Length: 361
Image (cartoon, rainbow, N blue to C red; front, side, top):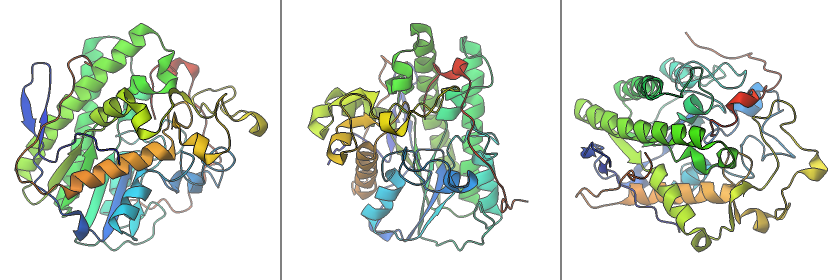
């Protein structure tokens, strides 16, 4: 099993910010009997499929309901922990506010709003378990398709501040509702995606600065929240370090191709996001699952199910850590009233090409 250097307690921030604890005591993963999921396409298991009337994500381009070729990390984590009851609010394309990069009108705040009203996104009543495990992984779409110019440092800081404020608001709502354990991954380097690999050095530098600032700010926010809400464990998962380690030695995890998608799918191409079904795969990939498992990316921005499984395994390892003493990871210095029942969305409209170089998810 791939074991990223992750910590439930302390993140060492790199650069000039020193050390900031992620106030999260050790957790016994065997106690969870329910999972409640918030986020975007990395965690979506059926919501986008429902709101697009079965259009996306679906065969032949994706596993039904998942923006991948199989299960996503929340599927695997629930399976690993023996959790059979999952309430999933995640929607592909969600930003941290009320917006979405597609035409599905659901961002993180609508997800949290439905939760507050005791409903699913389809208006069905929910029953929460006191031993529920919450996950909240969202934010990349705020930077992938920003509605403001991010070419200068002031704009980057303002955008990150807004994103972190949105995340803090959502986490505060969950803590006030009695959530005891919330997994909050930071963001990996967006420049690792195939979508970003060919972008300009300027855009890659902008993304590097933004992700560094986001991850540093998130660590500080989790520390502050942990001090204010002592009955809630804010469990920081370092997805940045996970990807850095995975891509530094991909062969050890059975990966051969880490720069190219297995398929030619590019949801951010406004002209032809989907190739013909008989021309789906990039050279070197095929419909053979054993071949697909050697690719890190399924399309231009989403990981394969093989990588999703490794993420879940690393999160499970984090939850099973028994030592009460803090450990450390780092952000390397080299990187700088709701009821939605009846919503009928006919499809997802791809983003304009001007966003193609601002990448991820």
